[in-house]
Image (cartoon, rainbow, N blue to C red; front, side):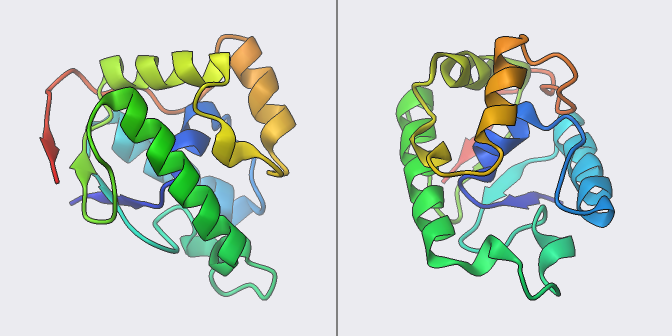
Length: 149
């Protein structure tokens, strides 16, 4: 199986510490984090993904807003630049420990955070990054160097 993720969730997963929109959202995110930490591949998708799933039935779900699609595009461009290969819908990668550390380092420096503009969670993510990502749930899988576009 693969974890289906939209672009900006590649950044959100870096600082997920167990907070979220609803209890079901948070439980689901913990499940997704466990799958990623175990080395399950990520498939980049457009629109709602495995993290969004618990929110899809709610009228106020932001995952279908046009501005979220723009956030996805900005995040994918920044992450692709950092990792050195193109990313878009259909791309598959494993978040191994080396990639996770590279992403967290760039996130802490602010170089991959253009997609975080106007995000309601940005201040929390900044605090987590400044604390060295203490309490972050996602752990890098053992290095395997796997990528398919």
